[in-house]
Image (tube, rainbow, N blue to C red; front, side):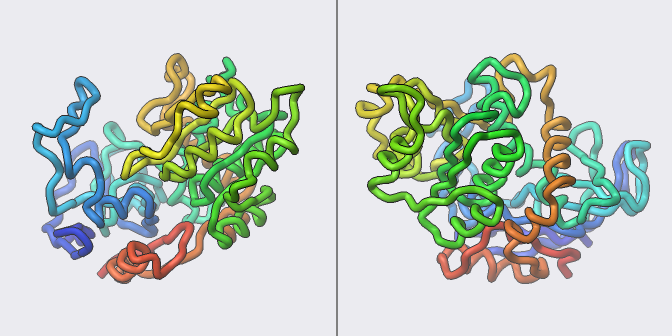
Length: 360
């Protein structure tokens, strides 16, 4: 039997047992070794707050339509940070014993399709636990830097941050990895802003400057970061916290004609952002770095495989630091219902929770 973690109704997790089918030609069978929790996304499914519950997504026209069928419970797909070991294969793409990074949700077994899924073989010298970042979450962060590069006519990750003053709003796992990537690729200075002391401490452990989001933050940073008369502030801001307040902070801290590269997901929208103030008067730009798309014109250079490869490069050089700083919890998968409940109720702080399989 295959055990899969599902959300039968808002605020509840349960195990769903299904009989494992025969392995089809072209596929491989793998057993979960580690599966990571991406709280920002997964808690929207757990709480029932995802916009997919309120309206149907029409991919052809790119619109949420209230009259179209919306997501309903149960939710059978949670998570996108899996590491699995191949046990059987009907494809030459992988061999028994291989460790692969994938995105298939919290399930004990996967029948992987190398033609239809991003399957990333993990190097033998990589800590397998760090593989949870390789298939999806790491590429999210790399894609953020790629959007900053494209904003200034670049094509490589360093082009948008090298020698520049970089601000990261939001010190969760994505914000911290983005900040580390910016530092590694030559940013002159990287500041992470977050109201949570534990997250500011994590940023400092990564070699980044960390500040609280205070009323004086924008003035303090613009006093520090001077380019010319009347030209002060961050060259680029990576917005990684899904609140209107964080987006407002990002816009206030930018230099004139600067760009916010937005990696956040606004469950409740961003009604409090005042576009008639700094956004208008400083001629700012806001770009969404959504993982489903690399910048227009760079798809021939940057596919999902290369985004994952850039993640592996970061982990090869800084893996122990990432594990010590970002992986705050390593617990059995059986504890997932309690972990979700604690995180949802804010009884527990975590940057990255990694569940160890198998579940049962």
